[in-house]
Length: 144
Length: 144
DNA sequence: GAAAATTGGATGCGTTTGTAACTTTTTTGA
DNA sequence: TCAAAAAAGTTACAAACGCATCCAATTTTC
Image (cartoon, rainbow over all chains, first blue to last red; front, side, top):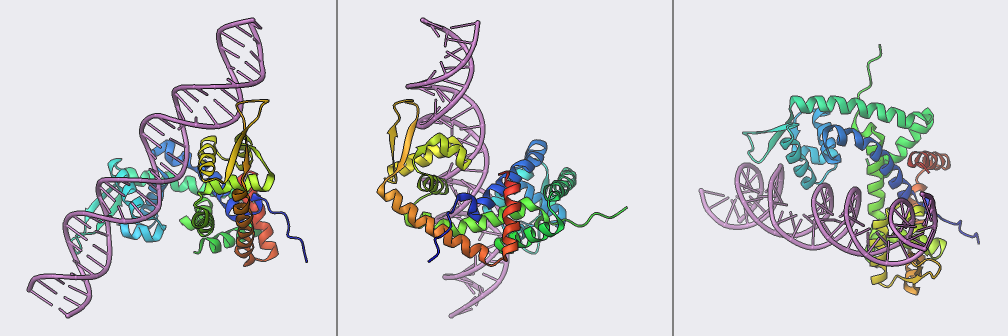
């Protein structure tokens, strides 16, 4: 009969994950928020359009794992702020192809570099092996 | 001159952390939400009071890294639902000592066990070494 | 080929959250 | 010693979210 170990919130992986996620997101948030007035969902939408090219809102939903109402509102805000434009697709008029404008593209280029550098610095404190383990564990837990 | 590697959202650690945090929290959420009608902040408050004994809202704020308005609202809800009671401290009448009721204590005992089991299952798919690395990396990133 | 079901997307509503202001009590310091 | 600053906690307000609903276009089905 082994006594169960004492268990603190710090031992609870979902809690630790939340703290780490909040902390890292908070730090990077200043990039897209302060410079471009974007929210997190907007930055993710810009990322997808910039990284993978024009696509519909539906595609962003599935690729970015975002709910369609969040994407819809993010797209509206990005359109209002001239980061993207919608264009109709004649083969199915329910769909609208989303494309970054010049402004959107340069914001993407800037944020893309910033994200890469930020990530490099964030995981740079760990060894190559630690990075691999971290990545594998997170991917698994996230269900990717 | 090395070409930079292509960089996907899945390579961006804050994004991965968010997905993993959301996924794991979502699964555990059903325990405290469905059984006790609690929100996440309320569960955390209950955890602290159950695990470390009666304390003030201020102490919960600093120990749980929660903003005082969130704690204030969580405490109100928990009090309304009879999970805790407030009692005045005569040495400083700004403070109120928060204690779990019997109901609160049994909810804590139940959730505490559930959390322990949930965590064991979540990280049980990893090796001992992976668990250590994951814990170390998350703790570091979270700034603990 | 028209009614029914489905799909992409937008919107309304209630809930949750963050920020700032506010109340009350305690501490500080001129 | 008493006015100002600070601290614990609450509240007001606006922004953001999730959910359900709705609309318009398309596909399915009988």
